[in-house]
Length: 104
Image 1 (cartoon, one colour):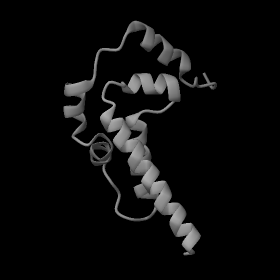
Image 2 (cartoon, helix red, strand yellow; image 1 turned 90 degrees about the horizontal axis):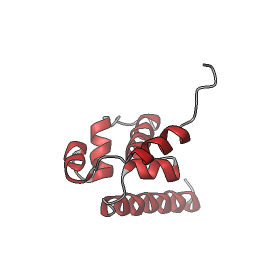
Image 3 (spheres, helix red, strand yellow; image 1 turned 60 degrees about the horizontal axis):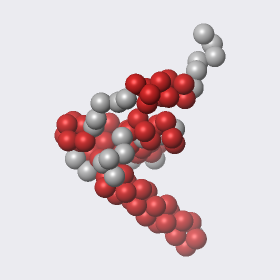
Image 4 (cartoon, one colour; image 1 turned 135 degrees about the vertical axis):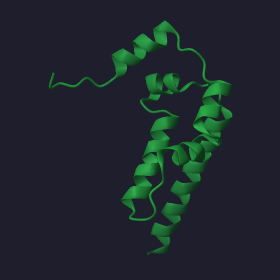
């Protein structure tokens, strides 16, 4: 592996950790808000993490373990501490923003 390639991997890992830590600190930002604004949330990030672990041929990571890596605590605990009831407006925005299955 070239030094440039290794450096890129290290930078990408650092960016991931910074995003993860930022999302851990911003418990005021709800997953639904993230989905509505950015099209992804903490759960998506943890799913991508688990997918990457499976794809590299190494030891797979269970969904709950990946969530704990992203949330910094068990997902259920995060939900109890920080998740609020979604507003009707946020739920409507989520339904409108979801990709629709065109085969229906």
